[in-house]
Length: 326
Image 1 (cartoon, rainbow, N blue to C red):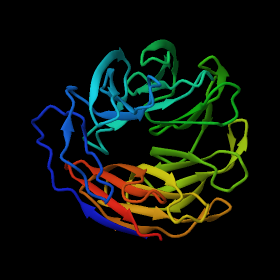
Image 2: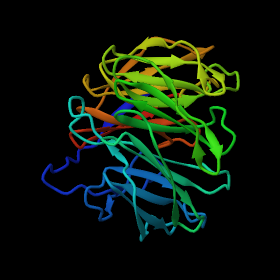
Image 3: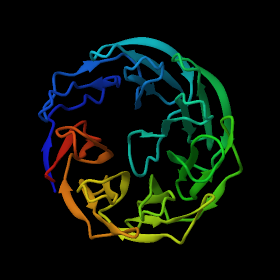
Image 4: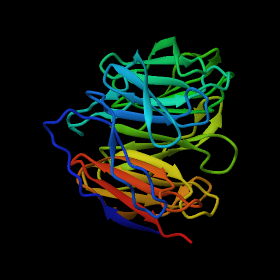
């Protein structure tokens, strides 16, 4: 289903990290990279934060988020900077940072907001978008110990998007939106031994959002089928390669059923699980990728029809898996 190729650019470990972007040529290749100056940059979100029709960037560090406004031609201008933790790290798994950062509409006004987790403090903070690329302080609430990933989805709240947070060792916490960008007390779900990654989608076609949780110890991904109101059934394991530290959910084979792809940091591989309906999945298909793959994203790199996979390794290389579905 997927072909793979590797980028060859290596990251200098002594160099301050900066965000790069590559402009697609539409044929699976990219132009030379450009660079923005953000010392300690570790996470990036893309969205139209000032509602001008052009995609912008929110670049996160361990304590701040920097806004850059797109001009629609691949160039960006600097915007405001806000205090917001967007990075989490579990040193016994990954020497580098993991993104704890998400953009979604939390207060129902149709404007993108931001949420970031503070791993050491065990909190999540929300910044509410004003629609012009600026943000106002929202709420900060306890997420449980060692939050690693955030997912915004509709789990049954009454306002905008709800939040799910995977907590290393402590499972998953669901926070239902109460309106106005505020959230209720956590619904805590025990799943796995060392959950490290998280995804949300309607896996069984019943119109209710389900969860996928990657476990670094087993190693498996756990499937939790939603029953509404932030409740979920018992987790079902599906085997993958060692330590699925990041995952993506998308319909890769265009059969109308969500599939799952993982970046397996301890196996230097990516696993693809094809959905077969009812929330069940076929056995994994393995692909070799860059060393210590720490992040995976599903995106249309070559085709406007099906999604490909982009995998980033701790060694600074990028692997692009081109979808062979036709």
